[in-house]
Length: 156
Ligand code: HEC
Image (cartoon, rainbow, N blue to C red; front, side):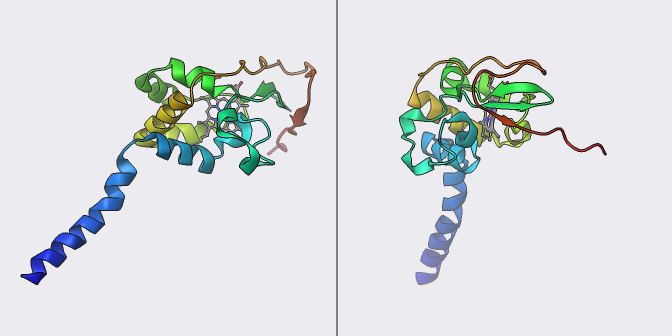
């Protein structure tokens, strides 16, 4: 009588972590955005004070520029972009990510579908807010505001 019970308990315990990881959810999206470092660039001030940056200020983009051989780029306001995309459109965009540096395109391209869906659901839940980030500048143009200067990689 006792053995089948133990077996059932064991299989239930083994199945739990797998199933909870696979289900897309806003909570998982919230977690992923933090551990994948998305807030570090897409949320002003987050890199230096993650604990003091309220969730409502997350992913609104940044006016801090990133200047390098590609010109100057600004981390986009994802709160204006993701809620306007369907989950399927977001998956497609992520699979084809080819933005200028320092955007880690590879992270988006290899992210599991359920993780991408979770991120989308969380950002939709956060809601559209804020202004678009400043437009990118061509190489040679001087940014008006503060910018991180990234040197060109050394010649091979
Ligand atoms: C090191 C800084 C940095 C990190 C980390 C980062 N991004 Fe970005 N991201 C950028 C910059 C800068 C751009 C704008 C690139 C351009 O203008 O070509 C960008 C652009 C994007 C875009 C394109 C939006 C548009 O304008 O259409 C998406 C989507 C995006 N990031 C999502 C993410 C997600 C999701 C993460 C976390 C996995 C992330 N980013 C992490 C800097 C970053």
